[in-house]
Image (cartoon, rainbow, N blue to C red; front, side, top):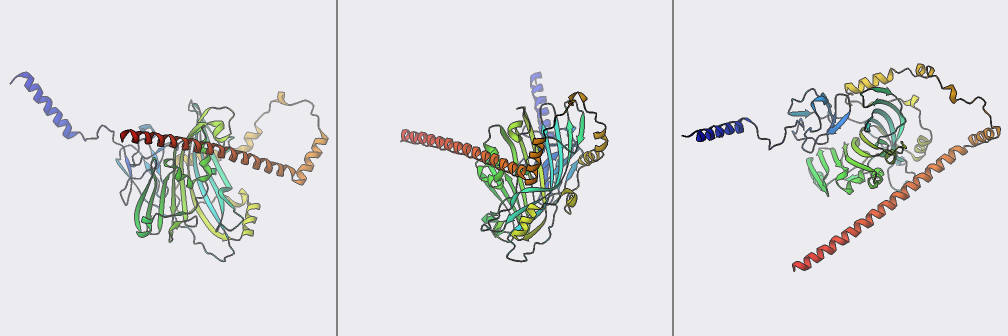
Amino acid sequence: MTNSTLYRLRLVCILTYLSLCIPNTNGQPLFPVVVDSLSRNPLANVTIFDRSGKFIGSTTQNGNITCASDADYPLTLRLLGFEDTTIRAAENDTIFLQESHTQLPEVVVLSKQKKMLHILAYIREYATLSTYTDTVTLFREKLVDFMLPTDNNTRYQGWRFPRILSTKSYYRFTNSSGLDSVSDRSNYHFTWSDWIGLPASDRIPSQLTATENITDTIRGRYGTTEIWVRKNDRVTIDVNVLSDAATRKWVPDIAAFFNKNNVDFERFNMRLNYDDVVSDEVTPLDLTSYSFNIESRGRGHGMFRFNRRDEPFFVTTYTETYLLDKEFISVSDAKKWEHNRPTDVELGIYHPRGITPLQESTIRLIARVEAIDHTSTRLSFEPDERLVAKHVRRNFGLEVLQRIKQSFGIDYLLGKRNQRRLWKKFLKEQKEINKEDEQNQDANDARKKKLNKKTNTKEK
């Protein structure tokens, strides 16, 4: 036997040994997978926070964690309807999330005259604003309410957007050098939470009405659009808003931003939990909680109108909304609620029972912000005397006119009128953009039909 033959035999033995000892991954690295502890099914769109409490991504459709590095650990995994889970190191190949249940008080209809549904809710919000140099991290708690009509015949429509009754904000500012500071206020309002209102009623797929425990997947133009899961009288819906234009029915008020050229949505997922579902549709009366996860990129001025410099911004928003109380009231009482809104001091922040506790990094941020002594900070500030005029000339005629306006409420009326005018202008611009997009789409469809017709003619 020659030396070349021996060398080949040795090489074959080594390759055979390696193929048996090393698992086959098809050239792909192994990632931890997040699954349901009961069904063992992979959980997609699980929100992932790093060790500092910053949102870094979500699990894939197969439940894999692909967005975390070793420096990001320990990780916090969060999904509405499940208990929060902390991973200390990248050693577990399978992470099990345990399901949690949040029960709401019963809603009693006292009279047919109660034509408005008043909903009180608690919102927990995580947001990040990033530029090429700086990062702003926000944790915010809000107590909000909604007012919805029970039928379409009611002239008074209330409000579907979350109206803020009480709020607490905690900001952390970090620059490129790693230096940071905290505050409870900021000049920037950069989250999407105020644009997401309560979803309207929607009919349950026919497959879910016949069976108590079933999952139904609805596919759209660009993949899976909705996943409906029914367990007895509980229904969970996972929505991928970017997968098809039809899914925008869940967020109709933010749909106008999809047609803006300076805003790019990279992720938009929504999860809704319903309880005590006994009919063939899900309604706001059955809704117990919902969450959404948005990753967007665009120009600062075009996204939120808070910055004069037209530089790129990256904004992520993860929000959880828990419904605390529901009550049917009359239209007259609903109008009183609208015009006589309680103050922050009267209400405070109410947390729902059974809500998952905050992660350690968020607790540390709250402690740092609450330790700020605003009085000492304000008194220690020394104004620049060079900016102060030596002699101030008072315009008594202008002061009298301003007091007359305030006494008769003219300033308030002018402000409301200007707000309505700007809103109508915005809607008009969006309608024109939508119309132009539809015309372009029709033209493209016509060209495709013409090409297909020519192709078929040549084949014949």
